[in-house]
Amino acid sequence: MQIFNYFSKKALRGDALGGLTAAIVSLPLALTFGVASGAGAEAGIYGAVIIGLFAALFGGTPTLISEPTGPMTVIMAAVVTTMIAANPENGLAMAFTVVMIAGVFQIAFGLLRLGRYITQMPYSVISGFMSGIGCILIIIQLAPFTGSPAPSGGVIGTLSSLPEIFANIDMIELGLGAATLGILIFTPKKLASYLPPQLIALVSISIVSVLVFGSEDIQRIGEINIGLPSIVLPTFTPDQIQTMILDGMVLGMLGCIDSMLTSVIADNLTRTEHKSDKELVGQGVGNIVSGLFGGLPGAGATMGTVVNIQSGAKSAFSGVFRVLFLLVAVFGASGLIEQIPLAVLAGIAIRVGMNILDWSFIKRSHQVSIQAAGIMFAVMLLTVFVDLIVAVGVGVFIANIITIDRLSRTQAKNIKAISDMDDKTPLSREEKKIIRESGGRILLVYLSGPMIFGVAKALSREHAQIANHDVFIIDLSDVSLLDDTISLSIENAIKEAVELNKAVFLVAKTEVTKSKLDRLGICELVNKSHVVTDRISALRLAREHLGM
Image: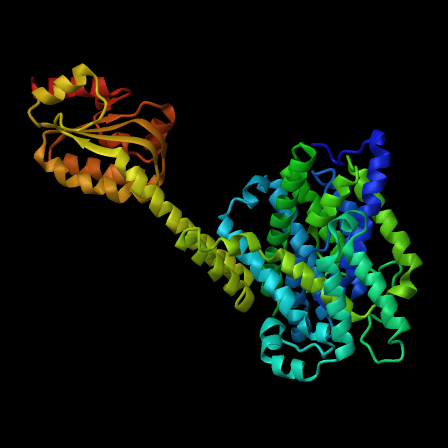
């Protein structure tokens, strides 16, 4: 496997322009997410630089831009709050350790080649937890947006403190936040294609806050220590180790989903095909190093990736150029960054939350099935008010149960019990003749298509007919998939027929089916000569057995 990502010297000009554009988009978001996470603006910058660099070097999607994202920031904010509350002295170091754990999980997913399975969950579940994350990001930014002190307790704490937040609104900061939001929403598309609205809002509103409201007591980023980051050694406590591993798994899984979805978008724009497992390894390496140096967790970012590709990027050089431009901007403007009002960053974060909400699904929720809409809104509410992993677990479980029920009802039609010629099952002329001449003494149970555990109940209903016939034939010649539950149900049917002294014949056409039954010891229940590979042979043997 190729260690490094794809680099092209021929595309340097396009990669440089793409990296510059992506850096312009990244800077406001890195600052916003750093402050929103509670880890500080520096953590956002370190995350954008470190994850962007290592994912570009080791990832599997050449034009992907990796950095802190809204969903990852929401989870990180909860981790920071929980860890600091549990251990005020080492809480922040423990939070960064969770980021490293997330990276380890991502590398494990990649090495186990699980990349293509990561996003194979129902869209209603993905839509629900993404919309829930969007709601969380909006809610937790209400306090800084209005100039009020940020309450503790995350979403629940913010919602319970709404009366106090509204009572302490600072009209100047609310105006700055509203102006930021207005620029982000109403910037003309033509202008936005040349200059990111986030940068326009960040620069213009920050300048206004200094020139017009410089004498007012406005909450700003304040002094930030942008320099070479110090190493944050992994920190654990026995009481929190289980929580940290669980949080790391959630962060890692969310980062995988975020990155894989963005990689698919990149494939559509570039007409290429990314390497899922390699990308997960690259993301994991980036998150481990980011956590080691006090940076936020990150993933493939849709906005940065799209502007990178549209600006001409062709290879992983674009991600490296982005990191270089980002470093130049940060070190050259660190003094100016300190003057950015928190209300401006809150406005940018709220707009990100609004974009994360799946408006397309929400608007059409009355047109999709009740089950899909119910799962989506249930997952969204559980994400906001309970926990992301609970929300996804419940959503996937319910969605799978509904899907299995539908498949089982469809596949149950492919189990047919044939004892006379009234059935509409395709049989050859000789097969029909044998069954007709048996006078109802032969029962042929015909299965076709994939047989999963949900169909076992339909097969068990045919057991009652065994007693009324002398010969029992199970035809699996057209079965494409046979799972363990159905195999055991077939075993029960054979045992019942043997106990009733009925002759049993088994048709296993493919070697896969026969091997499956052999491993479970089912073929041993049947006379060796009665296990055949085609239906006509079984019917001929049955005719001989009956002395017809």
